[in-house]
Amino acid sequence: MKKRPIQWLGLFIVFLFPLTFLYFLPENTPEWEEDAGAFSIPTEPDIYFGFPKDSFFIYEATIKPNEFLSGILLGHKVSYAIIAGLEQETRDTYSVRRLRSGRDYAILNRDTSTAADYFIYKPGPFSYVVYSLDPDSLYAEVHRHPIDTVIRTGAGHIEHSLWVAMQNGGMNPALISKMEDALAWTVDFYHIQKGDQFKLLYEELKIDGEAVGIGRLLGANYIDRSGDNYAIYFENENYSGFYDLDGLPMKRAFLRAPVRYSRISSRYNPRRMHPVLQRIRPHLGTDYAAPHGTEIFTVADGVVTEVAYTSGNGNYVRIRHDHVYETQYLHMSRFAKGIRPGVRVTQGQVIGYVGSTGMATGPHVCFRFWKNGRQVDHLRLNLPPPEPMSDEDLPYYFAHRDSMLPIIDAIRLPDEKPEFSLVVGLE
Ligand SMILES: [Zn+2]
Image 1: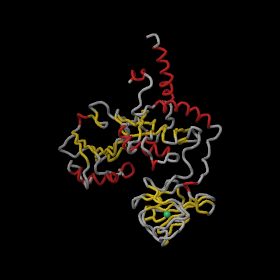
Image 2: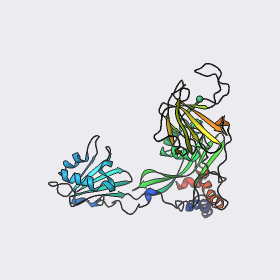
Image 3: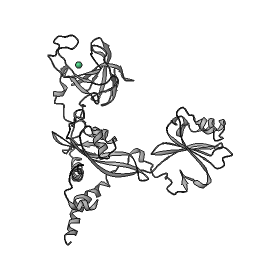
């Protein structure tokens, strides 16, 4: 018994002390949270979206496919003139044209023998819109529910897929793309292996105690055959994004591939037997097979130099990234909107869609990479390392990293036995 206070102190230092830092982490509140709290969600049982419940007859329903606002409101004695006026008056606040089927709404009426007083629309979990149907005061008012952000951890190991691993760990599958965004430059998510493991530290968004979404990913560790791959989120006046343990940005100038969820069907090979021509012809690109219509994105920022068709290449786009590197994307079914020579594109932007135009046996994108005007195998290329953080900012990053690392490392994998019995006692 005498040892207890010391054990608790140890626990505080190892687990709770780093957590005290955590609560100061979200320095810049995300955009959607800006005016959270300006309006308050009714928590009192007799208040309904800001209105006293006992003063209104409340009708709740879901907008059906092909149902119009006029159809709904006419059924509640609201005149055509009021509906037309409402459409006019709410154009700049929340246009009634933004109403969608499948979303919930409510109608509030003081006296059901006369026209309804309010129409409340719920576009999603984060907000609701109040439309006043008073002919002397027609308006729309957008209210945001106050959002609580809680820090959560999650972990999993790959048996079948990331998706299954997330489900088994009780995590929101939205975390998959967050993790990919953080680690896509170091982990090959197209070829994950059974036995790979991951640990995540992230924000969960809650409204009235109910989880409604995922906020930021704060840190991740993906453990594959190459070892630990850490990504830690950092933000100050000069930098924001994911960094590795040395303070190098995770984001590289070039993405690994121009399509998601694809497989390499043919590698760069100067002595390949051509599948259509049936003779040796160099293959100076990498083929990614993907279903017809899959999005193709540019692997780096740049300027479009060619958007064209030839009998061999089919529809293709060529992009110059800087004075050294160029890329080209072949056999597209069609180009993305607005892609034409001279247009500036940013890494990950969709430039076209997978097809099999030109000389192609099936839907794929042939991805070609030029370095100083010569075609090269981008999978073997040592691309320039990213710009490191400045010497002034690095110490701040390292301090942040040192507070995050023990927390990430302490996350237990689903089948891992707890190290300290004391921790079990806490749960
Ligand atoms: Zn090819």
